[in-house]
Image (cartoon, rainbow, N blue to C red):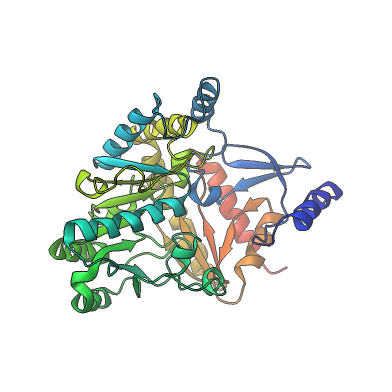
Length: 405
């Protein structure tokens, strides 16, 4: 790092809580798939804000939508309506093939919304005795970092030291349909929902076994239980379809969305479901001062319009084929790589003898930004706007990073 980098990083170390351990890069500007640091060095962004930047940095359409709204009104709270809110809800519901929307800000807020709604729905619709609702979740999940959510996490870094933990959740191995069936056999009348990531992102881009999501969908349907898909990272074009569930021919009872919905400009999240499900909420029972604010709605409406064209889903699917072919080829020739998983422009690369952090630090020195997870895995999620040439260049740097030093 240069003196300027070190000075700015020093301020971070001195005044910011140590809840992150960032790579030694200090961004100053960005455009498309590239970030420029304070010294003018450029980096190819192969993380894309954990899918928040599906459309790249400062996409002209999204910046224009934000600027236009900034000149009109940015916040009124939900105490009043505004002219972006109704259209946003209608357009997002249509994109999802659903009927109603609850807008929030962060992904964790969308998950918390789903937990509350599922419980309320179970009590008012299913007749589950008050206080006895159960939600089935999966080992390796990552749905956020609130105290309720970490209560059902299996990640010790996210969970340990933050108890007492909230009850009401049963966790089973991801992809184990027999384990899900066993839980339903034991607790069936109390289960109000199954909360599942169609692809587990933080766990290392872990793919479900063939037929697993369809099996969960069938079981939820027969039991009269909600299937809630957390598509906060996997949704909105990341894997070559609008939703990851679609690749398995599955339609859940509710989608949880975030990250890319805000276009990398503002935090926007939502639970999208049917009128029967979201209709259980009454005024005063749930809300957010900033949820559904005019600026957020204006940007999200442009995101939805961009997705309606199918262009970005198609780019992810097409580029994803060459992306995974190249990674598979690299894995076959690089003994350091033990596995490659993923779909579309999303991949988890796991190493045997190398730490993910060491690989990411080496990549950063070569001009590529990625992020490690769970020790030996790195996640690659380039913006959907990345050019084939830049994608190839980034994978060349990964190959270079694995060469002996």
